[in-house]
Structures are given as C-alpha cells and as structure tokens.
Image 1 (cartoon, rainbow, N blue to C red):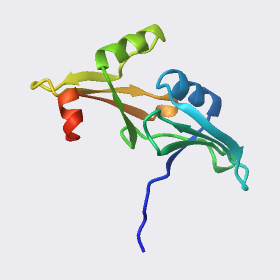
Image 2 (cartoon, rainbow, N blue to C red):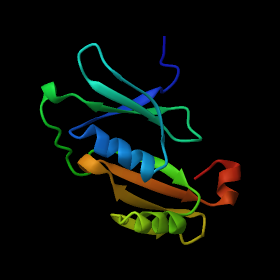
Image 3 (cartoon, rainbow, N blue to C red):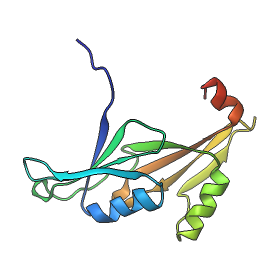
Image 4 (cartoon, rainbow, N blue to C red):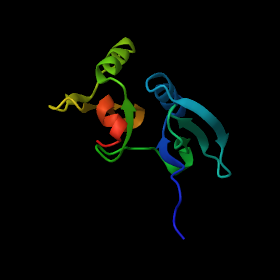
Length: 136
C-alpha cells in the first residue's frame, strides 16, 4: 500500500478571512469550498487555476494562537512573469520580501512574498523553453 496522490496542504491561521482575501486577491486562487469540521475548525479550500491540489486554510482557536517560525515552510507557485507580478503587487500596495532573482541563463527566476500570519510564498518564473521540456 502506498499514497497515491497529494490532495491538499493545510495551514492553520489566526485570521481566516484576512488570509482568504490575500490568497484570492494577491495570488488569484479560487475558493473551492468552505465548511466546519466535526471538531469545530473553520476550513476554506483554495485552488490555483492550473493545479489539482488544494490549499486548506484552517481557523481553530481552541488549539491556541498560531506563531509561524521564520523559514519554516512555504508554498511555491509558477508565474508567467515576475516583473508583471511585481507590478500587480505594487498596485495592491505590496512588494516582494525577497528578489526577484533571475537566472543568468535567462531560464527563469524566483521571488518571495509574505502571506498573512508569516507564511512565505515562493513565486517561480520559468521560461517558455524550459516549461516545454518540464525541467527546472
């Protein structure tokens, strides 16, 4: 017996609505569903347009406040252009927390933004050449 497929990744939060707004407005994720778990957690599931896997945002005050350690974990998303994403951030009054750092060979680059609660988001730009061969 083995695991067959990654279904979702969960991040527990102090302020559910603030984070849902960030993931939808800044990253363009779609809210797929929302419900309460049997133990009382408020759950919101989000999805990137070209992904099957979901992100589960969880608010469960009974387990205490969330304190995210620096560099503990991050989510990584592909973007067509870090330059254009930077303009999008600026229009929202935000900025990259690190980068962008482009590869010298022009094959892409990475940048980071901080989500509410202190979780880090990595943004990866991969050139069309590399994308077609699916290697990075």
